[in-house]
Length: 124
Image (cartoon, rainbow, N blue to C red; front, side, top):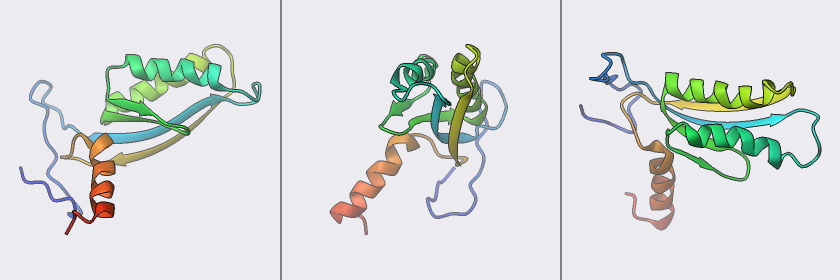
């Protein structure tokens, strides 16, 4: 399978272990309690811990945690991380942005690397 970053469509790969389509998804998610104390880091860290324990590639920055994997796995992790707070009775805010790109993997770092290449003048 040949991948083209500029193509509108890509061939959808099939996971040989499950036989189902692998729909690569890169998610940016922010999960926090609504109305809790002004400093939310203690609560946010509980949700981030669930994401980190998932085994999916992830990284946390100042505003979001990025997660990459098959769409079903990513959405399950987001649900589980949300339930970490909601299950304790907190009204919980969830902000999600998804980049669903069949055929591609490793986008959690590749997207940033491509921007860096362009900025450095290495991209033609």
